Image (tube, rainbow, N blue to C red):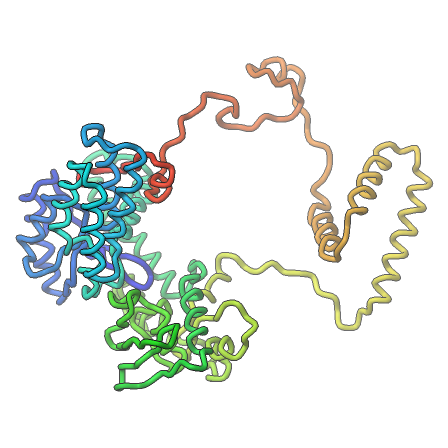
Length: 495
């Protein structure tokens, strides 16, 4: 799997008999031959702690950096602490994993070494944990953040993208069913799986089915604070190199547009940070790691999905957007807005603008310009007078009086115009769908196995009061640590 702006896509599928180094190596050698034809450069591998897989990768690509998935590392340590033979109590268990995470996420090598020495002194009584931690720390370059800060992995320190795509294969393509044989599995991967990715990438290229890009909005909001800071001074050091002040304006960070990096902790691995976003807004620059999809990005995605290329102009907006009307400039000028809109130039569109294909905004009824408040009140007076006359003439109608009393009791609680509008809007939407429900025949009620004797139709499917199913433990490491319980294990034996 390789990450893109649209998500992760597979650049090779390996089907092997078992998880041995020999099988892995044979398949990886075939993939290497295929990748060399397309000049695919590999920056690093992020895997779990599978010795056979890591050994095969080292034999085929000895020059490529191998990193461990930080999630699987923390999960393995957390499950190790639950083994009774390791003699770690419940209270000490939480302390151990917290100090281990301090070592793993330390922002510098000095702090990482210091956290390791503090953990050794603090847990001197837990000899097995000290030994386990010491052995793990010899491989610090594979899982400690401070030792991988110079690796350009776009801040993908876990293999969650690969895990997600395996879930898609199992749920969407295979339908949680096993393939009858290897030929059928190959057919699913070569045809259904390929068609699924082709359809998804085409939708992204055309701007369909994308959810709101909340990540960019959060980064843009922080970038706005940097821009609004009067003491912050932005400097252009080179064509694609800028000096950006920190939030406290006491230090500066270097932003490289061509590499898509920043010298801050968040952007050192190539993640899109607030400093890069601020440079993009002020100097009208596009970053290769920005969530914004440009026209070139859309054309490339369409080519990957369909093996046929469309012109770049096809993906441009229908109307060019003037610089003063761009969302990033409007967000910079309007200080009362909480969130900034993503930058949109004549060559790019915001992913957040594509939500209309999935969730069109709810249409609200608007008054015509020529309708005055006096006319609305006049119509309402006519309605209330007519309703009062009907109620007085039909006082013997128990059904009418029951609902009128409910309406009067409910309406006495209105305090704002929004409540009144919501009430009438709901009543108008439900108009025409009311009426009595069809009741169940007495014979069907008598044949029910449950104790319910209601004349309502029972829900289909499993009964609500049936056999209680034990809730499956969630595969949420942070939640399980807070509840001091073992983390769920989804599959495999290498993590």
